[in-house]
Image (cartoon, rainbow, N blue to C red; front, side, top):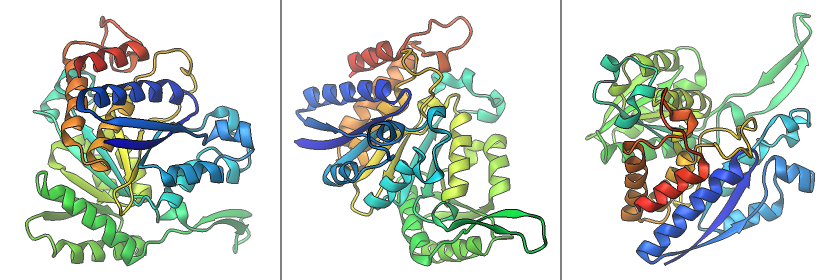
Length: 358
């Protein structure tokens, strides 16, 4: 089977980690009889340098024509002073909007081999945890109006950001979360701030209605401040966390860090047809770019998610995940996940070891 993948290596460590992930996909293709064809395009800071804008129509068209998109990371201090409408991160928002990506899926799994790297006490971790954060991507304050005006009470200039959600937007992300929970532990925790925000009250009411379509799945509601606390107090209580764009952005990063390293965790952003954009959740890490020490595992696991969610290839996805777990169980560590005394390996060596395990 032939699959066309648009590749956005991006900025910072993006080119290094994506290159390793592409080699892993090629190894999967050799073993299982698939052909992965790549078309590289620019987005983010490198696009600003080459084209004057973070996202071109050419990149959008290429990504829309592909079966899925593999993304590294965008941004860096080099572009901190460009106008806000041209910042590298605008490329991500533009791609999400153009591709209709409304569901961001971020798993946070505690690998037993990395238990020592977890900042939470062992007695709290117990046998580990397996959480998925299901975050809505196209609404909320990120896509509301952003403006400034003079304060009505004479306090000077004030910044204003509109937060809103429609019933339709909440319904479709809620159904995605409940469908995922059905094949997991059948628990959805909906996170909002319904005691303060009208947006959250619409969210909670809508999720409650959708929950009636899934009587086999348990629904609980939690305020976002309590959810942030519970993630470090008792992460094992969660199965699928359903939440909006802003809260999901924060909670998914928190969930990632309690696993031991943000460099370990993949993500998928999906549209209604099942096509998606796959990327590690970490940033471009410009401080280590070009040094060959970045952890490629999150990007490699993002490819596994691509195989499972967009291409319908669970065996191939499982082969990548098993290869990663074997590498960790065998004691191989990049610097971000190494304990004192561990031998530290680089980006390419980790990629080579994982490919050898497939």
